[in-house]
Length: 277
Ligand SMILES: Nc1ncnc2c1ncn2[C@@H]1O[C@H](COP(=O)(O)OP(=O)(O)OP(=O)(O)O)[C@@H](O)[C@H]1O
Image 1: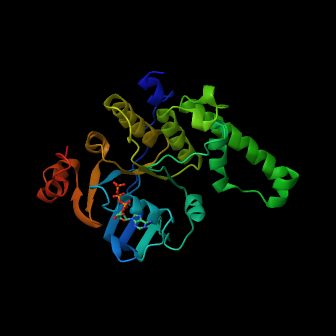
Image 2: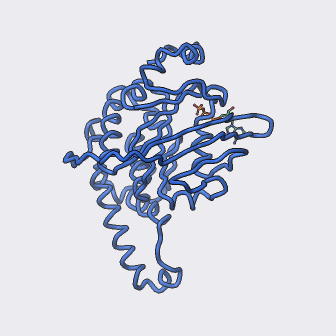
């Protein structure tokens, strides 16, 4: 399958989302320790609805830890993280998913032995709106909800060009398609905020170009606010409106891609890892 078939969405009839100036996610003075190690120090963030922001920094800078703090995998040692004014610190990952915060992982996490369709279907259950009794008896809201979930799963697979592989076992998909399936799973919950952890990992330059288009497309089509972590500077500088740069848990810079590229602190942090941009 050609790279364009991998990432080009089927429906290109895009209605641009209205830009509402509303703060969706805030982080205030967030700190996180692993034992004696301060992995994140005084992290602050204000993400506006509709924004596409990147978090960059050398290996071990604290980027994935921030995603894990937002999504409740870890509980912040100090500080506050709010989504639409709701405090996230102390909530479980399940509760945070139900608030419509979706994510992908640096190392792809799929139900490897389940089918492609079931992987997307299962991702919907964070929103389950029927009682255990209804599920047991398979009546009422359960049946309606199951129908909706299957229809929505098939719609997502069609958008992502995965419908022909719906019955295939997830682990048998090529790497690029597994990454695509992971994003489809994250979108199954109908997220307002999507966190993408190194979406371009393992991709060649051609695939990265298509991924950049794809991220911009899903942002508009699904009215998303996106926060992404990425080492691929082409992608980061090409599509992010604003960047935060971390080094050893500290935020060392915050600004537009142009400002970041010319920031001496950033260049210093990346010395030995090649130039930024
Ligand atoms: N569960 C953990 N237990 C102990 N230390 C951890 C844990 N997770 C992360 N760390 C440490 O916290 C620091 C930040 O790690 P983190 O994974 O957030 O960095 P990163 O910026 O995402 O790195 P990379 O770009 O390599 O993925 C590192 O020093 C890492 O070794």
